[in-house]
Amino acid sequence: MAPRPQSLDLIRRLIAFDTTSRNSNLELIDFLRNYLDGFGIKSELIHDVTGKKANLYATIGPDDRAGYALSGHTDVVPIDGQDWSSDPWTVKEDGDKLYGRGTSDMKGFLGVVLNAVPELAKRKLTTPVHLLFSYDEEVGCLGVRRALEVLKDRPIKPKGCVIGEPTLMKVAIAHKGKKSLRCHVHGLECHSSLAPKGVNAVEYAAEVIGYLKRMGRRFAAEGPYDHDYDVPHTTVHTGVVKGGTALNIVPKDCSFDFEFRYLPVQKPDDLVAEVKRFAEEELAREMKAINGETGFSWEPISAFPGLDTAEDAEITVIAKALTKANDTIKIAFGTEGGLIQQIDIPTVICGPGSIEQAHKPNEWVMIEQIAQCEAFLERFVARVSA
Image 1 (cartoon, rainbow, N blue to C red):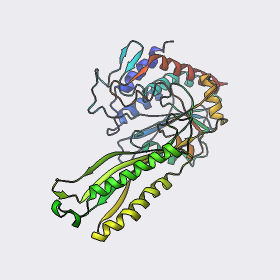
Image 2 (image 1 turned 90 degrees about the horizontal axis):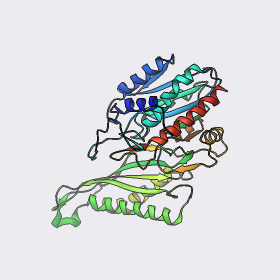
Image 3 (image 1 turned 30 degrees about the horizontal axis):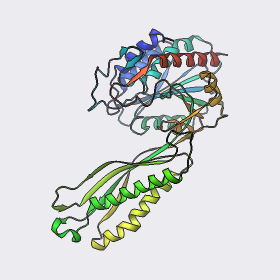
Image 4 (image 1 turned 90 degrees about the vertical axis):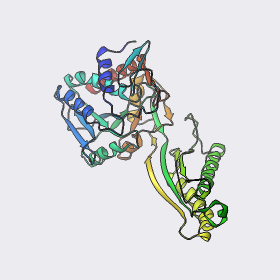
């Protein structure tokens, strides 16, 4: 099964835009808007506060009724420090794979959606198709939040959504939520020979990190579990630690970043409250006995809710029919799906490629996956035209 040359050309054009999250995505958005304009489809841009990034929202077909949204993000992760064997911004076709930043996550899907636009535009659709292309998904699903603020109170909004993140074209109905924080530990400096008179911020940070590790072990050993996930329990991870200036100085400051990837049945605020309770009740008292100015402060980094769509939801049934599959999956990585679900738009995830290839050097997607996505959208077009 081979994809159409038009899809491959559009994927190449999208990947040529360096839309790493730290950059503006407006050149790509202008390309999308002009492309849609060519088929008589008007787009709405929803910008960030700087005006340097934008979401694009468009409706194809009748605007007096709710339809189905196809959603995807336009940003990609950085290539910094990665050893690529080819130009990340130029698609390389080699054997049965396409290489390039975003081929799998997730410009492959966007290219196939754009390839379906001419057919959608010429059909007399009975059900509208909404396109929602967002920015800054890779840094906390930031862009789509502004779009959803605009859409949530409209009299007509999508009645279902498919997000094209890489699932090997399987229908995912659930994913974990994420909540990440930065903990600042405020200690008291002194010469290391007088260590008991100081408050060692690095050591107290280590105690909290150790507690987080014990939480993770507890979830692994005791649950709760959902064995439909490849990692069936909530996970806890500390990824960045910064502190200290010299070995002979008791460190005054230390900070560390940690996250929870939690099952939808768990409440992230309860998880955060547990670790804060340990720090404030078990450790801060001891610290303040030496100096009252010491202690902890907490800074949110990012968060998104989990997704949990019913097996019998209309969008699930439709997506299963379009993939010709009878089963569904649950995924560990996050998407904007939980946010979309919060404004009462049932959502599933189904797209070409594998998350195992995302974010890596020499990112790739199987060409056959692009063809499978085309077949999915051809059935989708037929359905909304019926």
